[in-house]
Amino acid sequence: MKDVYLLAIESSCDETSMAIVKNGRTIESFTVLTQMDTHANFGGVVPEIASRMHTENITMVFEETLKKSNIKMEDVDAIAVTYAPGLLGSLLVGVEFAKTLCLVYKKPLIAVNHTIGHIYANAIEHTLEFPLLALVVSGGHTDLILMKKDYDFEILGSTLDDAVGECYDKVARVLGLKYPGGPNVDKLAMDGNDTYPLPKPVNDQSYNFSFSGLKSYIINLVHNETQRGNEIRKNDLAKSFQVTVVDELIRKVELALQHNDVKELIIAGGVSANRHLREEIKKVADKYQVHLSIPKIEYCTDNAAMIGAAAYPLYKQKKFADFTLNASSSGSIVQKKDN
Amino acid sequence: MYTLYLDTHSNAINIVLYQDDTLLIKKEIVTEQNQSTTTIPVLIEVLETAKIDITRLKEIIVVNGPGSFTGIRIGVTIAKTLAYTLNIPIKTLTSLEIKAVSIDHDIVRIIEREKNGVFLGTFDAQNQRIGDYTYLKTSEYQKEDMDKEDIQMDYEKIKKYTNSLKPLNPHQVNPLYVKKIEVQK
Image (tube, rainbow over all chains, first blue to last red; front, side, top):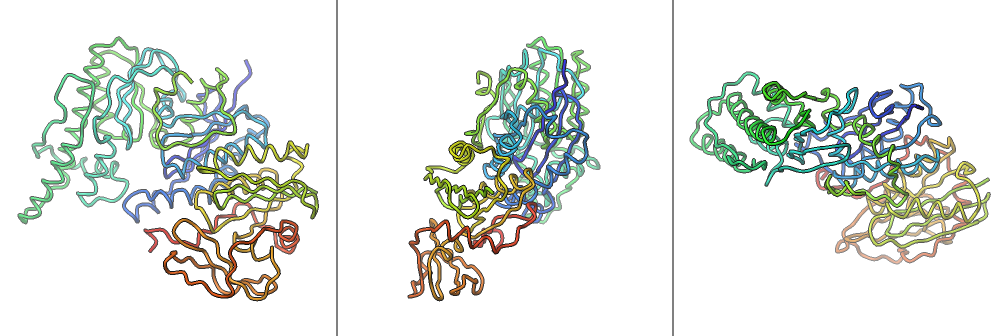
């Protein structure tokens, strides 16, 4: 069978990324231009600045991506782009860029959901084994998803309030850490001990998560201790927080593994780069004897390689978008199922 | 030689196709939301009406602002991508310039309104800009005698004016925002 080359574009937040992906799994060329340093000055992503920087950089990222590979645009079979969810202004730059390329090079357009992209980061250099259980953990998501085949998503449970990545960022801020918060909390926790007693999140038998109570508890704790003139042991608090969060994620994964017969367990999303989570999820996969797939670190954060991997099943099914494609800040993966 | 003119700085999309200096097709669409769903389809319609393939475009002119942030980003992103991929010259015009060059005038201050304020630009009789473009909130703006606001675009004049402009590197073509955002203040 002829090889399929997809050019993938991702601009949903503060990374302008493009990749050329062969047969949905081999990365031929890959570029990520991050704006992290710029947004760090503001303590978080400023949507308008993110959109501006995507516009400034998009043709250069394209040039760079083509330069790194022997693949020419004539060899590319389709162009895939993240259309939702994310920052609207940022998504729009990628979507308009992708449509223009399709117009010039006369290629089909594939609209990819960003969250599905994170799941398919696991399909890079790896064949997904169904049925599988996916834990999607990012700044916008905390979902447990059962997949019986490609593009078949059954959401077993989700966060009832804050996403886990969001909670990490808020805790980072109260600890006085720089943006991006998650990786910095993870780093701080490396040298800490779990000495702060923290409340357990939703301690029930559902597959749902809740992190806002824990977040508020930590904000209050830091506030009260500071008022009393007591010093916060930041490393220890980061460690205790990390342990509490990961325990809760693992407990729900374990519950899902007990009640669903799956061949593979995968993690996806920015928080899947978290070291403690990676260690603990490996233990649970071993315990239940399921294969564990964790994306390489560079495919955990926002990137276009995963968008190319997620676009491949849509390409095979010829599920193409037309030139009226719009970006959307929200977008459930379940709606995508019947498209 | 075919030239494409693209203007999405307001809630309207204006696409003009020129053959040399002659206006061949002009299409204006007023959009309800952002221009994302309509700009490329309108561009395709214009090319189909003219029965030319996109690869026959030999020059791009884009209005890069000031105006709607999202609007100018859509126009500029499409325009710079076309210029880069087709390897053709690209020129930019501002939303104030296109009004100034459309009329005969002495010193004139051009007004471009947006939701909560106005963009202002002053030009001499030869359409040379005097001073910087500025943005004022509606309440801060005081009308002066030399101000001109409702101007009918003259696309042939606009085209002739662009003939004197130097083409830019597509990578360097960016929106002109003028108005500062909260974190920049």
